[in-house]
Image (cartoon, rainbow, N blue to C red; front, top):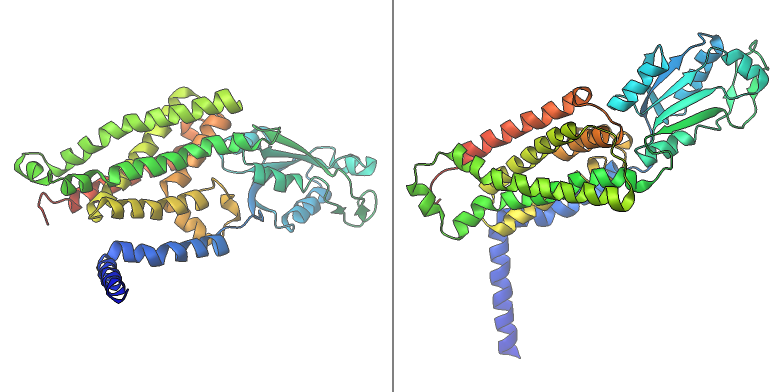
Length: 369
């Protein structure tokens, strides 16, 4: 047993030494639990606050200003815009500029006198957590200024009507299925391409590439093309089954869906290529993919509302392609938005693709080091 224990300890010592020399793996040992702790303990917040909303004040009365301020101090919403008509507010909801709008009618004063509802919330119901938070304002009591009709206090009841657009039944699968495309494509596209150059190196094929006249950029683009078709097949399966099995409605244009999908696939593939120029083994490539995947799931708005996150977490989320694609696909697929209305996120994905491809090309060297 003494000899067996000695041999076991020798193997364990060798494995520890090898692990300590593998900087990527050793870094993952420390960084993965650290990042998960920070994400779940600090960045993830199920209490939805500061939802960007707009006000449409058709009455222009003092009561409307008081109601607006009382809605603001709930801290559930953040009033970021004021529109003149409900049509403008609806267009902003479709474009994703705001998540909801409170419409205060012309006859607000008369409604308060009669004890009727004070207005209506127009809500983007495609995000069920945001919709639930705004539904909580439906029965908020109103404190009206002295001198306005009906005295100082409005009894609790149905204070506001709520119209949930795009998902009136509040089905979670309507929100999840489009967002799931971002998570699955992030995982597969980055994983496949992150191992592309590493696999060539491990199999000894790099010598063949060295002897060819191919340029680094040509090699990078050639590596990407087959996986574009893989991504198209995957998103077709996800959205097709989402339509057939879960009856997720498609409210947009097919051409817009193709444009945003290709933009996200390209961004994910180029990020995977950059990882492949850093990783030395396929195991390292897989570990680095997980390092990207976890924040993409937790910070992109797929599981938790983006607006509920603290600003540092939002800054990190803005760097992730999945964050922009989730906005795009939910806008096009669920809200029927046009690409022109979602242009900032689309341009960001295009710029990210060019930047990652440039960096990966510069990092690639047709050598064996």
